[in-house]
Image 1 (cartoon, rainbow, N blue to C red):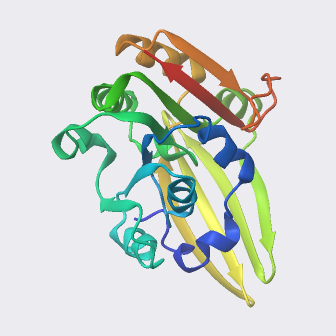
Image 2: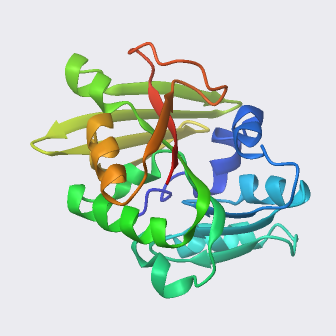
Length: 232
């Protein structure tokens, strides 16, 4: 079942482009080639393009990619593509590869994350950087914090609840719009930060920095998201 099933028409209202996220990526004064994995409606891709970068966005959901292409901007390139198939689709290397909005946790298990990291490292330039945002599952698993913050925008309310099932989690979403409720459920892999470090090291990433937000602030343990940068 698609993650976007009940939120596709309201995605940009619920998750508007974060200026801090844009600044986190836009750190080079020169043009870069950037790949955004799990790009959704492409808001970040379009913003980076207008800042002078060459941008490619991919998402496994064809409907959300069609929506990204429908912004009437011929700058970024979008593909409906599985993140595990990067090597088959891209021959040239990227300066930055992005994987935000907990996209990584949509992979089914550690083996799939390892496979993704291997493929990702091969299409990243030797001096490139991988940037990732994933839920701080160390906090979730240690404290039992299964409720993510409720999002309220105008007449929209989005609730997200996670349920731990052995080595995976089920994420239940509930969207309330004009009094009507739409529900969805998707599986997530609760990957810990130590696992991320080990798997990135395996494929040649020797320098990894962890932050609690896109302003690169030092982690304090109780932050909801892990933001990281990794270099070969």
